Image 1 (tube, rainbow, N blue to C red):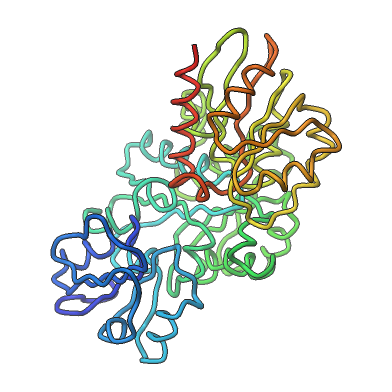
Image 2: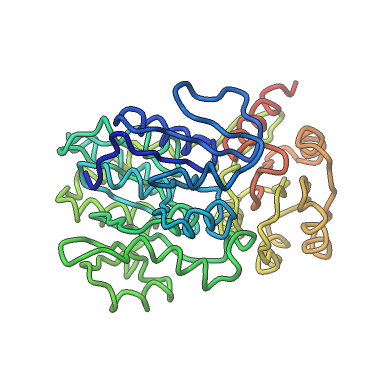
Length: 408
């Protein structure tokens, strides 16, 4: 444990799941938990000092530490106030890391990190070891960190938002699946996005492992400068790249390939990632709500083997969708675009496929069903963030499945 929080004032900026988990951990450690939230809170957590509906400098400066939820930018005013007052500022992942008693396998990447994290956790479980899967997938790291044992392993899916606010964070195994354009609504350019991702390996030493995609030029170029032992995946290997990465992570942990292969054979996939929902009227309905990037859309389209009607769109992340035009022209019979990015999708793909725009997902599903042919497929692969219409991609995927399962 890096620091003692007893009687220390810890102010958490942002009251989403990660922020509340961090505040509750502070309380359990005998600290004074404070939360500053820009919006009104429906159910403020018990025992926590709250300011809501905006941030005030006095509230922030009355702190020993400031912890950021992933959604809080590093250039936000509360962060500026804290730093000017000499208060240490850290992200929720950094906060939990300083309390973590066991090894960490951290997984990042522009695409594939959810599947890779999930598979690695299953491999560790099959090997008979205690494991906790958390971070950007499911529960926040802070929710579990105080219940971990030294013999456990944490598998942590971690985004650039979480990485950019780390300081000492040092995973035993860092897995970086790939790098491509993403989150350009948050990061000013690709270079800043890449530098945020690099935080996953920044503090590693000779006893740690960096598992990198050898087919990704940026990661291959990064490898010689790392202090960690580099384990590449993808060189002369065929198969699912997520499984290849997981196999190397298992190797770093001393887990045999036989356990990996058994895990892969029984793995049923991740919810909201190319998830089969229903076969109706000769048409397959596929939920790929986890698709929030261009490359995630490419992955889905490359695996579309039937005549496909595609539903896409959501909150644009300032990405360039045009590289997918040849693939869309070849694979997609009709496109339904929703959300804030619907006109962008129409402008990008309208010259290679018929694109209709919709104000709601329900309307898009209804017309997609009518447009789909027997023996075909309706693919919901948004390639955008969900926050314009939904709480998160999981909420979006659940709504899609509810709509599809309600069709008669």
